[in-house]
Length: 404
Image (cartoon, rainbow, N blue to C red; front, side, top):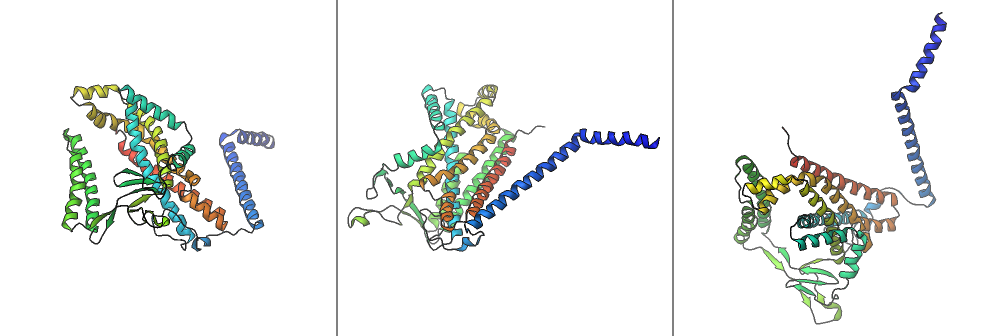
């Protein structure tokens, strides 16, 4: 009897294991991991075989070899005798430069256009509407080509001045303007400026807490102007004015090759940088404008009526009541636009702006280190995206509504 009772029990156990969702789920996950491991191994083995067949070297030793090519825009010291690693670092800094400035201008333009889109003035509202609909429906690459080939290639030639306003000149070589020259003793003025900015931030935080506790406003704007302008100016005068201005020098006579703006005078922004910055800023601003519009509309109209009932003017209502509440809706999608702008900056390779992708492509062509260069590209953009997301998530938590 004992043997006859055991057989049905084992059959029941096997049937229960097959029908158990947890067991089936574990089996499927194991099979998926094995399939992924096999796929990754095939990719690695295939890549290694192809590299060996083409006699292509691997490793990171090429980063110390001499690059042998110049870069038209470098924020750190670089020359043709610098290493490939230095060249990639210059490209990385150029990517950060155009992305950082682009995010700033896209945010400013996007907020202005988004608010203008809701204006009761029909003309202003229609202008904002046309701007958004036209620019966001044209591919970004075409906009980069437009600014570079149709606009900045149609300006005066290299031997012509092309004055926009006094002190600022635009020709085919780029935009030139006055630049500060820091002499001995200017460090104190720079430190005073940084200190003034830090104090302004501290005053802004203190004024916000004071207003939340007492309802009284503090003149933060005039205080900020006084600190940022007044403090460095006092130090500048007290230290004997160690900062001078270098204006662009233009030579109209002499040998033809010596005419034009002289190197080392004023600042210069190359056309590739200007084209990319304009395209990225104006294109991304259209999406930010719609995000701002949606955020403002998400705030209950009763908030506006309540602020008017308290005697606030429309400008104060928008700045103190509507925008702070709308920011809780605006920040999450705004993060995506910042990431898009940073990643879209890789289109710079189309106009030869020396960003990370463009410089990396030159290094790849000279060394053949495809795997390493692509790994660097992916690692850099992934790191920038993760850091941007982390910062915006932190800011979003600070702006989130605290429930008690």
